[in-house]
Length: 79
Length: 289
Image 1 (cartoon, rainbow over the protein chains, first blue to last red):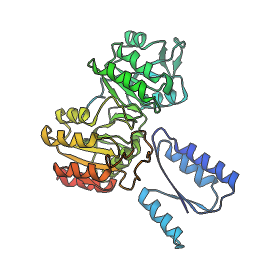
Image 2: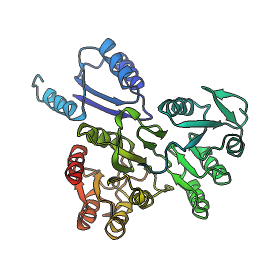
Image 3: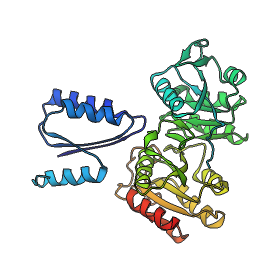
Image 4: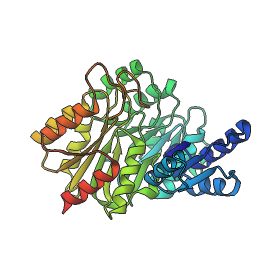
């Protein structure tokens, strides 16, 4: 499981989301990925993930809930 | 109500025609900051979203009465950009740029300390007085007006802690990121002293991290000089010695600079230290009563 935890200031969440999609496209990675996007351009970033990310990418609203979800996925529990 | 940045701030943005400079100058302006000028050598006469561009800080200050400068200049030219402000009428400099060579900063630091101007950063997220003005790159939606001052070496942790405070209904007077470099213009003590003198700051959150001895020095200042209570947070309890953790200045050297040592130094002087951003917020709420 991969956990991506972003609270962007100078980092823009929409660029993180686009970068993630590009990486997935190039690598074809199928492992579960938990993403938390907060901060600059957070709504744009979440919208990009919601519209275009594959099913192995899940979005969580907070740092703690994202960490819990990642641990649960790693343990084979359906969160 | 606030320190360093407020409704009287008149901001000049150095490097305003660059990608980041233009983006954040425009956002600062949209938040309500008086962004009165930009500087990019050779581009005088242009404008960025209606903000006039000048060749030099001196020209910008003369034409617009700018009193605060924000530096978005690339690392190799950033030290010169700061020195240019030191020789202008502008009083406060906020340097966002990361990656300025330490030797360049030593030269800047020596020049800075000979005068009475203030530098916040480099490698910092800037300053926000919620509801009034912001100078920097902080995600403004996280903050709300209130009576807690925040001073921090880390941008992201500042956002996280401010968000946790907001969830408990607690706002901030001013939030200051002093930056993650080994050589920065303002220390914790410089900013703690300003908060202590601010009648509208009831409590201060100090967000430290591994490396250096700034937190230990601040612990003595808090106990010996300040009347405003302080709650602490130290990042990096799991950090391995010798490894740089994100910031250039965040590195444990030998046995010095560990999170545990900093926590103990603060607690020995009566400062409570939270182990997570949410625990910090809970301690603040408890302390405010």
